[in-house]
Each structure stands twice: as structure tokens, then as C-alpha cells.
Image 1 (cartoon, rainbow, N blue to C red):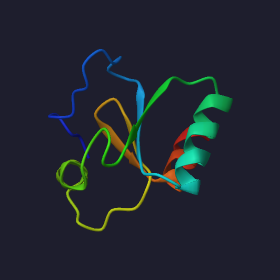
Image 2: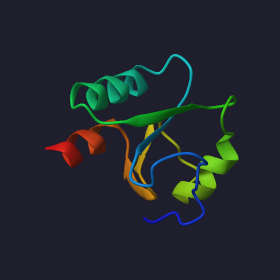
Image 3: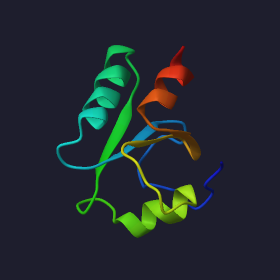
Image 4: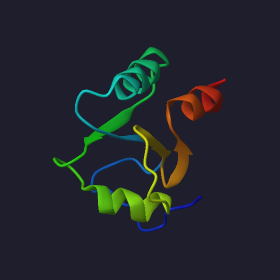
Length: 87
């Protein structure tokens, strides 16, 4: 799914973006995975950098799991999807 309205100032267009929340083990795993691969990412925390409604609009579902990972404006999905994406 392409999210054309997703544009974060000052970010490289193909940079990974992790939309996570506090105390999320899979969010930490996603950050660790990208770091171990030497890939740049921006971590955004729920209720600090964005609200749930914004994320629901971007992924087009009310059933949100965390994290939700994008590369540029392309939705990759959750941690398992990120792992598959990188293989």
C-alpha cells in the first residue's frame, strides 16, 4: 500500500520509519534489526509523534498492531513483515 500523504520533514524519502509505542518488544526488535543491518530509520512513538487515528488512516485499518514499518511511503507491515522484507 502506498501512502502518498506520508511525508515527514527532513527525512530521506526511502528511509525506514517505525511507528511504535511505549514498552513494545517488537518495536525494539524492529529498531535493533534495522540497526544491525546498518539501515537508517526514524522511530516515531504513539502519543508523542503521532496519534492512533493518523496511523489508522495511513494503513487503512482499525486493527493496528505495533510496530508499523514503512520504507519511504511504502507500508512494509509489522516486525515479521520487516524481517521478510530484509531477507
